[in-house]
Length: 291
Picture 1 (cartoon, rainbow, N blue to C red):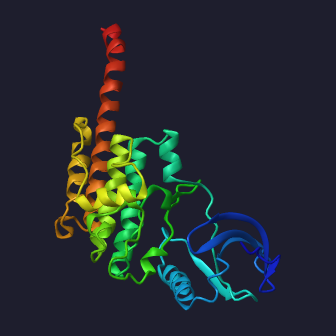
Picture 2 (picture 1 turned 180 degrees about the vertical axis):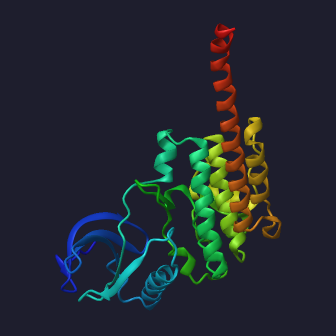
């Protein structure tokens, strides 16, 4: 791995690594001009001579920059290192992923459903612009410290898919994705349905090796949900629709938003009713004493 230069484009000072993926490394750098830290994604060494890798990297930067939504990390700048590696800067996100939050076990269901409703809003926005994410999963959902929710890593959506090529995260693949068949916005809805299923059951729909997971996804939807508490029945029904094998049978992201918000409204009303009942119960002894 080639090190990042200590100073980039006479403006950015390298500070620390943040993470790495298939095409690039992400580092924290200081933007001296604006006096703020930002995240910089740098193309991996060895890819700088690949026209395809460069085109995909540029496409990711430009696609992400074109998605002007609070749930998409904003891209600020784009350039090239002296050794030919491309880079782009974006806002640095503080917080944790939904995957970490789920593993910690400290995320109430209503809060988790609210987060997924906001991810569905991002997907509806992207789908309206003919952009499909293709890698919706808990580790690509970032939760900020002040309630922010981001859907990150739009790189796969820029891939030029060849016949027989499977892209995405196997544990959250739709059947058509695992079969290397054409994808669509419904592919993202299926992945989000798997995340919602995981929220309700406490575990992924499938586990195993990469090849096992791809084969399992290609077979079709996972087993039906086990019996859920009555107040989660609507969510279970939504999962069933989102995980329909035929993409045309799945709801659009906008419908998912509406149904999740309807459930949240019902949960709030139920909680309010419970508080009223409890308040009335607490008042009963006082009223009896006054008689």
